[in-house]
Length: 221
Image (cartoon, rainbow, N blue to C red; front, side, top):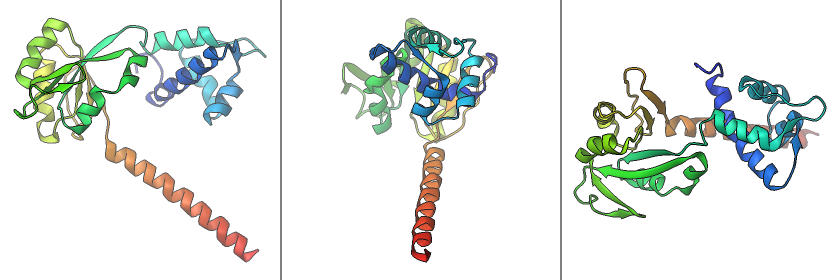
């Protein structure tokens, strides 16, 4: 990555942000990497490395100034500036994402929802009216929207992404389950729910096996 930080480290930074928000609200002035690691169930060396890669340093034997580290990470992640986005696809997932208030903490605001289903077009999701997809490119240009959240069927994901990329959309959060390919500098973040479920299932299997091993060990003892 251009910033010099790996995708794995980048994915952990929001965890630090959430914890730091809590610490600042509790009026805690400093936090050590050891405390961050303990409260987030991470390795301390990993925590120090992640924060160092963002260019922030703490004080020896004192740690990191909570408010300053929070502000630094928010700037590093681009959370300080508001970003507007369109949701493309007004199915159940699209509607859920459109109404999720947690995005505001990260500077993301959904300003349009689009679909091709005549039965959905014109319906309200909170204060947004579902609009026909064909309007999205012109509105993206007019409103200078640079982010699209794709919750469309996989077979149309590439065509929809091409349509919006041509209108100036530069970042796609793709929940379609189908990989899309767009020329640089366009950014694509794929979210595969099946992959997440597989990981959850694996971790559950390991946990259950550990519990069974412990039970068998207790019986044999």
